[in-house]
Length: 271
Image 1 (cartoon, rainbow, N blue to C red):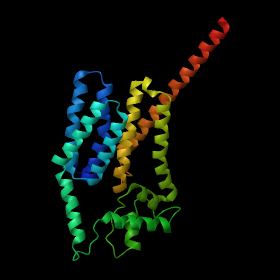
Image 2: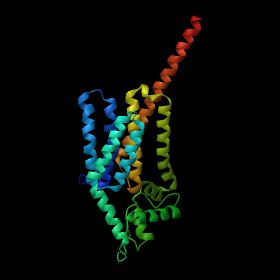
Image 3: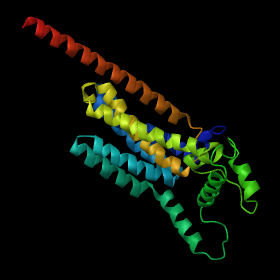
Image 4: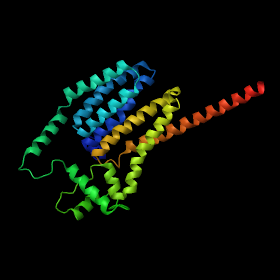
């Protein structure tokens, strides 16, 4: 579990920190020139996997699979990609026992007819959240009032948090807020493609941040499907990094265009 007295105390939220940070360490192998730092990244990645598996978070496990797949698509080295995938599979088989045990327990509970409690409170919370969105689509039930609204509208159920960031935002603050949240991910992907299509590889640092942030954000999004991460500082830190990356890159493109225009004028005058 994470540090007590913080939002990271929950093991699932704590696991999301590893998901968000992992791509920055992974991609640094290709962009850091210092040999010691370069190969330290290779050593740290298995330790991060180990830490992730210790949390027992199944959502984070799924996010790590997605993030690893994205990384294998963005990294050009075929040898490194094969080692990455094989290493992750070996780590999952040898160290992911706690996650597999939790899944087995869930299946056993679902097969026990004497247990009347829901298999997973997330499903119940999602249904409650969809009901809140339907009944209060414009303003929602109020910020941080999801559990209270559940007590009022579903007194027979045990009140839980939304267990889904989109449902939490849409149910508490209105459907429009939820759609804006989803739009952030689409907009970020468009900005990522813009950088790729304009040859961002010419600028190694920007290229590094471009790949790391999109991979981290994809992993965060998967985790946010199962957790209420509306208050999660690394998410907003990622958004700031993306904004700065995009601004710096567009400034460099503008400077290139000005230089190209100057060179064109010089050639015309020379002729």
